[in-house]
Length: 112
Length: 112
Image 1: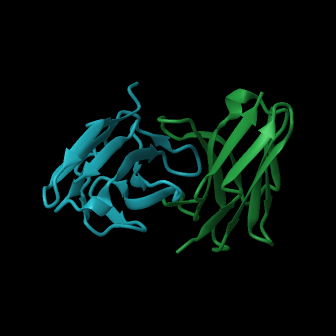
Image 2 (image 1 turned 180 degrees about the horizontal axis):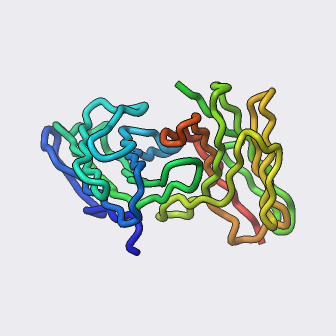
């Protein structure tokens, strides 16, 4: 089991560029989430999904889009990158019911 | 939505001492409370969790207590070791367990 994988590990974008952060899991988990982590602010939920075809907004969804066409994949799209989106992005997955969220290794994004 | 507050933001203890980190939550419907440890440059990993129908849970040197009436929960680490040095996050989840709200984190430093 690879668990939760994320690509790329590092990315530098210019303001206004768009890109997609990839996330995949091989544990057949129904729930998947995207978080951003900024210094002193913990992990903030961007978008989450409870299954293929079902997504919803978290605390800080503006500027990001998601889709969930398969159980395994949950890509995060930045529509028009802004310096305020400089952050570390984590994808996580979990099975239904209370239990561990498994995090990916993170993507460090810098927007200049 | 839910609001999770975590204190202190930094905690320094001597090896062998105990460490306590406290969190409060705002939504009485929250019923699952995990704690994560994040080492520098790594992904968060679950260390212990508790459900709202339980008041205390212990796993070796780590324990979590929950006071539903006061809406607060705490992480207790006894006999601290240098390898306990990390950032610790509390979180709260509502009944469907797919949406998590995190505290801002506590940086624990265990001095040898």
